[in-house]
View (cartoon, rainbow, N blue to C red):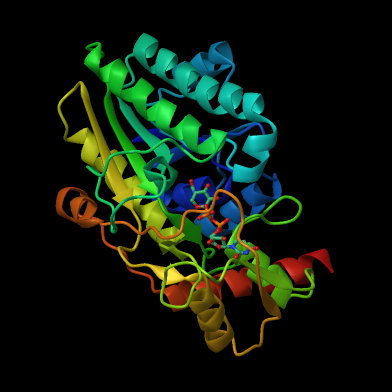
Length: 339
Ligand code: WQD
């Protein structure tokens, strides 16, 4: 299938491009490089050993998006393009509402106009807020998001559902990610946080690399086994493969359907367990300190991923050790490249 990958030069997008090629599909990237780097295309080319078509355009521009989909005879779209920094979204909500919701509206309008039916949407476990019970299933009620970023995901899911309710013949799957970590085992692509990383694992690897002086653990007085938050950390390659399973499932689905899947490992780990595992598998000591809580943090969440394995036939293959080894290998590669 010819698949347009919006935000395909991003962390999850680029890993998904690799898995789409591995599965025999023809991915085409559209990315305005607002939140990603062109160097990713070089890494992609080395992994997939052939050129990857990329349009340096903004998918908010519906006219341009339509022209590209028409010219490339696009049969399906995987929509990653969005800003995702929780903290930044609190400071600059309009930037997030305009881009994350605007780009989704643009994608939907073009699909309806051109009769493109298959859409996989990048959603997030943030729609669950602080769940009353864990693990969360897809039927766990969504809660008011703790950030404008999370709210854009909730709103976009509602837009997708309403588009189907209106009778449009689209076939849509929303994947609710938990915490994507790690990097491609080749260390040719990986996470490229801009500025000081907000997320845990890139902050850990940059601390180990000496780029950051010390990792601050945000809160050690939570109601968890060691007092630190619990999250569901999934290898980005496993997450990428879930998108291939989703787009392939859509091919066999009836028109006018919308479905949601949790994509995580189905297990939770505390922040301290991540730190200890990182130190163990990479044979190093990490400089960290237990500090105050970070506003907006959910105490504990991890996903029930039964539905994805039953209906999509998707299963996690990588371990937490794989993720933390691959994350460190990528950071060392970046250190070498940046000198
Ligand atoms: C994880 C844990 C922090 C940094 C992310 C994305 C969000 C969504 C869900 C995709 C928390 C702790 C972190 C640090 C720390 N993903 N931490 N010190 O908040 O779960 O959200 O996953 O949609 O977009 O942001 O991830 O990595 O920021 O934090 O102690 O320097 O690590 O308190 O408990 P989070 P995170």
